[in-house]
Image: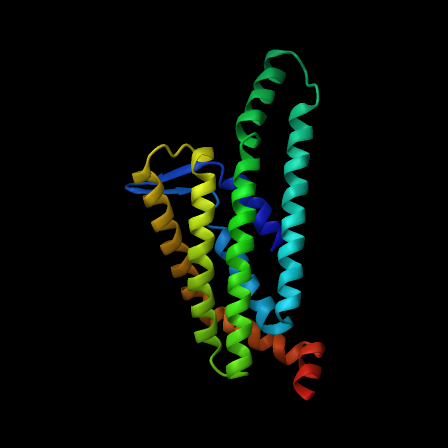
Length: 206
């Protein structure tokens, strides 16, 4: 989850256009974080899922600090060195804003995702896994996308309400569709882990 979140922060600083659809360069990565979050929540519980969220949060902040140090370090002063410095400033400079957006959105969305997963599991026990994942994904991704797109918009070059609405709507639609499409595989992975994870089997025995 941490690796996916860090790479998403870098990729999302680039605006991407597919015909009428506005997105960012991290669009293909971020749904993986929610899939992993579903697996952790279902197999290891809410406390473990929240630890994973905070570890991802810390790793992302550390990455931004590293980018700032790299940019601030004195580089070569020849043409190649100054061109590389300019490229680093352009590529990594706005990442802090994207990371801030990602942290705020991810904390809000992933925590809601976890709350819905855990609450529904308490009510239904081992039944209704697909319904839990579908419900938690819809709630979590909507809040996450709304927060992220609002905070990150200017960092990727969005300048109008129309562009923001496009970015937010298609971002939410894409993330949810990817996660829904992956649910059969996600449920199989969860089932495999449940059968082989000693802590889960011990919890069932209790």
